[in-house]
Amino acid sequence: MDFAEGVIIPIDKPYGMTSFGALAHVRYVLSRYLGVKTIKVGHAGTLDPLATGVLILCTGRATKQIDTLQQGVKEYTATLQLGATTPSFDMEHPVDATYPTSHITRQLIEDTLAQFHGEIQQVPPSYSACKVDGKRAYDVMRGGGDVQLKAKILRIDEMELTDFDAMTMKMSIRVVCGKGTYIRALARDIGEALHTGAYLTALRRTRVGDVRVEDCIALDQFPKWLQEHGEGAGNADAIAENIPWKTKIITPKIQ
Image (tube, rainbow, N blue to C red; front, top):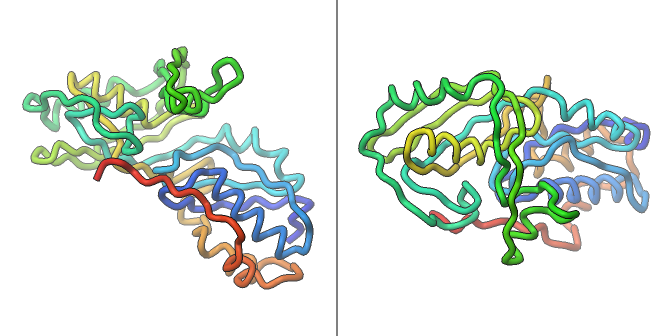
Protein backbone atom coordinates (compact mmCIF):
# COMPACT_ATOMS: atom_id res chain seq x y z
CA MET A 1 0.00 0.00 0.00
CA ASP A 2 1.17 3.51 -0.83
CA PHE A 3 0.21 5.49 2.27
CA ALA A 4 1.65 8.74 0.89
CA GLU A 5 -0.41 8.38 -2.28
CA GLY A 6 -3.44 7.71 -0.15
CA VAL A 7 -5.12 4.91 1.78
CA ILE A 8 -8.48 4.86 3.56
CA ILE A 9 -8.23 3.10 6.94
CA PRO A 10 -11.49 2.32 8.78
CA ILE A 11 -10.87 2.12 12.53
CA ASP A 12 -13.18 0.83 15.27
CA LYS A 13 -12.59 3.64 17.80
CA PRO A 14 -12.42 2.36 21.38
CA TYR A 15 -14.42 3.67 24.31
CA GLY A 16 -12.95 6.60 26.24
CA MET A 17 -10.59 7.84 23.53
CA THR A 18 -11.00 11.00 21.48
CA SER A 19 -11.09 10.75 17.70
CA PHE A 20 -7.89 12.80 17.55
CA GLY A 21 -6.26 10.43 20.04
CA ALA A 22 -7.05 7.47 17.78
CA LEU A 23 -5.78 9.39 14.76
CA ALA A 24 -2.56 10.37 16.56
CA HIS A 25 -1.93 6.76 17.55
CA VAL A 26 -2.33 5.54 13.96
CA ARG A 27 -0.21 8.39 12.57
CA TYR A 28 2.61 7.72 15.03
CA VAL A 29 2.70 3.96 14.40
CA LEU A 30 2.42 4.49 10.64
CA SER A 31 5.13 7.14 10.36
CA ARG A 32 7.59 5.15 12.47
CA TYR A 33 6.80 1.98 10.53
CA LEU A 34 7.43 3.76 7.23
CA GLY A 35 10.61 5.36 8.55
CA VAL A 36 9.43 8.91 7.89
CA LYS A 37 9.19 11.91 10.24
CA THR A 38 5.44 12.18 9.83
CA ILE A 39 2.66 11.37 7.41
CA LYS A 40 -0.53 13.25 6.64
CA VAL A 41 -3.58 11.66 8.25
CA GLY A 42 -7.10 13.07 8.59
CA HIS A 43 -10.46 11.73 9.73
CA ALA A 44 -13.89 11.87 8.11
CA GLY A 45 -16.05 12.88 11.06
CA THR A 46 -15.41 12.79 14.81
CA LEU A 47 -16.89 10.47 17.40
CA ASP A 48 -17.48 11.49 21.01
CA PRO A 49 -14.92 10.09 23.49
CA LEU A 50 -17.56 7.86 25.11
CA ALA A 51 -18.73 6.52 21.73
CA THR A 52 -17.25 3.59 19.83
CA GLY A 53 -17.35 2.43 16.25
CA VAL A 54 -16.58 3.54 12.72
CA LEU A 55 -13.91 6.23 12.44
CA ILE A 56 -12.62 6.62 8.88
CA LEU A 57 -9.00 7.75 8.61
CA CYS A 58 -7.43 8.91 5.35
CA THR A 59 -3.71 9.16 4.60
CA GLY A 60 -1.78 11.25 2.08
CA ARG A 61 -3.75 12.34 -0.95
CA ALA A 62 -6.78 10.35 0.19
CA THR A 63 -7.46 13.21 2.65
CA LYS A 64 -8.96 15.00 -0.35
CA GLN A 65 -11.84 12.51 -0.13
CA ILE A 66 -12.75 13.49 3.45
CA ASP A 67 -15.52 15.94 2.47
CA THR A 68 -17.14 13.31 0.26
CA LEU A 69 -16.86 10.61 2.91
CA GLN A 70 -18.44 12.89 5.53
CA GLN A 71 -21.57 13.16 3.39
CA GLY A 72 -22.24 9.43 3.75
CA VAL A 73 -25.30 8.20 5.65
CA LYS A 74 -24.47 7.18 9.21
CA GLU A 75 -25.98 4.47 11.37
CA TYR A 76 -25.84 4.28 15.17
CA THR A 77 -27.02 2.11 17.99
CA ALA A 78 -27.64 3.92 21.27
CA THR A 79 -28.92 3.27 24.78
CA LEU A 80 -30.75 6.03 26.66
CA GLN A 81 -31.47 6.39 30.35
CA LEU A 82 -34.86 7.99 30.82
CA GLY A 83 -35.83 10.13 33.79
CA ALA A 84 -32.67 12.20 34.16
CA THR A 85 -30.37 14.59 32.31
CA THR A 86 -26.70 15.53 32.33
CA PRO A 87 -25.07 18.73 31.00
CA SER A 88 -23.41 16.85 28.14
CA PHE A 89 -26.37 14.48 27.49
CA ASP A 90 -24.07 11.50 28.08
CA MET A 91 -22.07 10.03 30.99
CA GLU A 92 -19.14 12.48 30.78
CA HIS A 93 -20.92 14.60 33.42
CA PRO A 94 -23.06 13.66 36.43
CA VAL A 95 -26.85 13.85 36.54
CA ASP A 96 -28.06 17.42 37.05
CA ALA A 97 -31.82 16.83 37.18
CA THR A 98 -34.35 14.01 37.49
CA TYR A 99 -37.89 13.70 36.09
CA PRO A 100 -40.97 11.45 36.45
CA THR A 101 -41.20 8.33 34.30
CA SER A 102 -44.35 6.55 35.55
CA HIS A 103 -46.28 7.65 32.46
CA ILE A 104 -43.82 6.14 29.97
CA THR A 105 -44.83 3.00 28.07
CA ARG A 106 -43.33 1.19 25.09
CA GLN A 107 -46.21 2.41 22.91
CA LEU A 108 -45.62 6.01 23.96
CA ILE A 109 -41.94 5.70 23.07
CA GLU A 110 -42.68 4.20 19.64
CA ASP A 111 -45.26 6.91 18.89
CA THR A 112 -42.79 9.58 19.99
CA LEU A 113 -39.91 8.25 17.90
CA ALA A 114 -42.11 8.44 14.81
CA GLN A 115 -42.14 12.22 15.25
CA PHE A 116 -38.42 12.39 14.52
CA HIS A 117 -38.46 10.86 11.02
CA GLY A 118 -37.54 13.09 8.08
CA GLU A 119 -36.14 16.62 8.32
CA ILE A 120 -35.91 17.96 11.86
CA GLN A 121 -34.35 20.93 13.61
CA GLN A 122 -31.71 20.19 16.23
CA VAL A 123 -29.72 22.46 18.52
CA PRO A 124 -26.21 20.96 18.91
CA PRO A 125 -25.02 20.13 22.44
CA SER A 126 -23.17 22.90 24.26
CA TYR A 127 -20.42 20.33 24.88
CA SER A 128 -19.62 19.90 21.18
CA ALA A 129 -16.98 20.79 18.61
CA CYS A 130 -19.15 23.56 17.14
CA LYS A 131 -17.28 26.86 16.96
CA VAL A 132 -18.41 30.00 18.77
CA ASP A 133 -16.38 33.13 17.98
CA GLY A 134 -13.53 30.93 16.80
CA LYS A 135 -13.54 28.71 19.89
CA ARG A 136 -14.84 25.17 20.31
CA ALA A 137 -18.07 25.15 22.30
CA TYR A 138 -16.79 22.44 24.65
CA ASP A 139 -13.69 24.53 25.44
CA VAL A 140 -15.89 27.49 26.37
CA MET A 141 -18.11 25.29 28.56
CA ARG A 142 -15.21 23.55 30.28
CA GLY A 143 -13.67 26.95 30.94
CA GLY A 144 -16.76 28.00 32.89
CA GLY A 145 -18.42 29.96 30.08
CA ASP A 146 -21.75 29.49 28.35
CA VAL A 147 -22.72 29.16 24.68
CA GLN A 148 -25.92 29.62 22.73
CA LEU A 149 -25.94 27.47 19.60
CA LYS A 150 -28.42 27.82 16.76
CA ALA A 151 -30.67 25.03 15.53
CA LYS A 152 -29.64 23.19 12.37
CA ILE A 153 -31.79 21.31 9.88
CA LEU A 154 -30.82 17.65 9.53
CA ARG A 155 -32.32 14.39 8.35
CA ILE A 156 -33.35 11.22 10.18
CA ASP A 157 -33.92 8.41 7.68
CA GLU A 158 -34.75 5.62 10.13
CA MET A 159 -35.21 5.32 13.88
CA GLU A 160 -36.51 2.25 15.64
CA LEU A 161 -36.88 1.13 19.23
CA THR A 162 -34.87 -2.07 19.68
CA ASP A 163 -35.33 -2.54 23.43
CA PHE A 164 -37.15 -1.03 26.42
CA ASP A 165 -36.87 -2.03 30.07
CA ALA A 166 -39.71 -0.53 32.09
CA MET A 167 -37.99 -1.44 35.36
CA THR A 168 -34.74 0.46 34.70
CA MET A 169 -36.26 2.97 32.25
CA LYS A 170 -33.55 2.23 29.71
CA MET A 171 -34.32 2.17 26.00
CA SER A 172 -32.19 1.27 22.99
CA ILE A 173 -32.58 2.63 19.46
CA ARG A 174 -31.09 2.23 16.01
CA VAL A 175 -30.74 5.46 14.04
CA VAL A 176 -29.92 6.05 10.38
CA CYS A 177 -29.26 9.73 9.74
CA GLY A 178 -27.51 12.33 7.64
CA LYS A 179 -24.47 14.49 8.29
CA GLY A 180 -24.39 16.70 11.37
CA THR A 181 -26.69 14.67 13.62
CA TYR A 182 -25.74 14.62 17.29
CA ILE A 183 -27.17 11.49 18.87
CA ARG A 184 -26.61 13.06 22.32
CA ALA A 185 -28.87 15.93 21.31
CA LEU A 186 -31.35 13.45 19.87
CA ALA A 187 -31.45 11.76 23.31
CA ARG A 188 -32.17 15.15 24.89
CA ASP A 189 -34.97 15.85 22.41
CA ILE A 190 -36.52 12.39 22.80
CA GLY A 191 -36.56 12.91 26.56
CA GLU A 192 -38.28 16.27 26.20
CA ALA A 193 -40.83 14.83 23.77
CA LEU A 194 -41.60 12.11 26.33
CA HIS A 195 -42.05 14.82 29.02
CA THR A 196 -39.09 13.49 30.99
CA GLY A 197 -35.31 13.64 30.75
CA ALA A 198 -32.86 11.40 28.88
CA TYR A 199 -29.13 10.95 28.36
CA LEU A 200 -26.91 8.45 26.56
CA THR A 201 -25.35 5.54 28.41
CA ALA A 202 -23.94 3.91 25.26
CA LEU A 203 -23.34 4.94 21.66
CA ARG A 204 -21.83 3.00 18.78
CA ARG A 205 -21.49 4.14 15.17
CA THR A 206 -22.07 1.05 13.08
CA ARG A 207 -21.86 2.51 9.57
CA VAL A 208 -20.58 5.49 7.58
CA GLY A 209 -21.61 5.30 3.93
CA ASP A 210 -20.62 1.84 2.71
CA VAL A 211 -18.18 1.25 5.57
CA ARG A 212 -19.60 -0.95 8.30
CA VAL A 213 -18.13 -1.58 11.72
CA GLU A 214 -17.52 -5.19 10.69
CA ASP A 215 -15.07 -3.83 8.09
CA CYS A 216 -13.09 -1.82 10.64
CA ILE A 217 -9.75 -2.51 12.29
CA ALA A 218 -9.69 -2.52 16.09
CA LEU A 219 -7.18 0.13 17.19
CA ASP A 220 -5.09 -2.35 19.16
CA GLN A 221 -4.95 -4.56 16.06
CA PHE A 222 -3.69 -1.80 13.78
CA PRO A 223 0.02 -2.77 14.16
CA LYS A 224 -0.81 -6.35 13.17
CA TRP A 225 -2.87 -5.12 10.19
CA LEU A 226 -0.02 -2.83 9.18
CA GLN A 227 2.53 -5.64 9.41
CA GLU A 228 0.36 -7.78 7.13
CA HIS A 229 -0.57 -5.12 4.57
CA GLY A 230 2.18 -2.51 4.66
CA GLU A 231 5.61 -2.33 3.09
CA GLY A 232 7.46 -0.33 5.69
CA ALA A 233 10.88 -0.39 7.27
CA GLY A 234 9.94 -1.07 10.89
CA ASN A 235 8.32 -3.57 13.19
CA ALA A 236 4.83 -2.19 13.82
CA ASP A 237 4.26 -4.21 17.01
CA ALA A 238 7.51 -3.02 18.57
CA ILE A 239 6.78 0.57 17.59
CA ALA A 240 3.28 0.43 19.10
CA GLU A 241 4.65 -0.89 22.40
CA ASN A 242 7.03 2.06 22.71
CA ILE A 243 4.76 5.01 22.07
CA PRO A 244 6.34 7.81 24.15
CA TRP A 245 3.07 9.46 25.20
CA LYS A 246 -0.14 8.43 26.87
CA THR A 247 -3.43 8.88 25.07
CA LYS A 248 -5.95 10.62 27.31
CA ILE A 249 -8.81 8.35 28.27
CA ILE A 250 -12.06 10.02 29.28
CA THR A 251 -13.55 8.37 32.36
CA PRO A 252 -17.31 8.74 32.79
CA LYS A 253 -18.48 10.26 36.06
CA ILE A 254 -21.65 8.17 36.18
CA GLN A 255 -21.49 4.48 36.95
